[in-house]
Length: 288
Image (cartoon, one colour):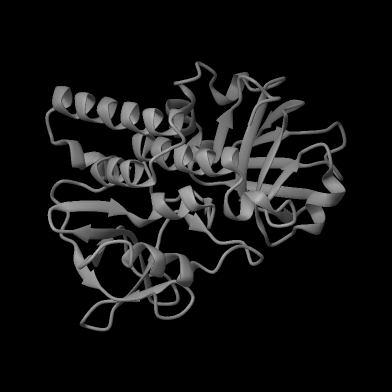
């Protein structure tokens, strides 16, 4: 996860100054009804490594897939498009049509998946200026933030973009049937969402741990209530990210949290966490 913060340079001091500026710019944008282009530029500077080698692409051709001149296919990482939400192809077309002469670039983030698609940051470039399409889509309310590749600083900006859309009820957030936010206290409803990517909010009732698995229980009856798991070997990584709130995983009992991921059915509704940004401690449960 270390490679995605290179947009602010290699030196620690310079990186901290740059990231602080990006975050302040993003918060300022949100405070003044949010400038989507400002936040998309900040996300580009923060998420894309300075030494990244982008590839020119065209698209999206089908279902959010972008193609380079050699025929390699890419998709926008860290986004989830609900089936009932806006069309990602139409939304992407709006971005490229916003200014004269923009081009699309892909910054590869890993090897191809089983469908031959490479996860990538998608950049809308106009001259020397780059904007990250992921941030723009989140600001439009066209997608849900689904962390897979973003490090903490990058994830913070993408989460801010989603939060702005939620507060302004843009896109899918203006339609309660499309917005995938659920209560951990309603396991029956969560079980109906098996196979869907959702956001769940609730209070951790108890914790459990085995040699291989850490359990977050959201009810007294593990056979029917909502349960979240992560690998015991990943707990230190989650603790490092949760360190911003001063609460390691072992101290989450009684805390109100927000989680995001795919719902499975395993003795009631279940969510497996693989990326630390899937778990956030909420200081003020009543606030969005």
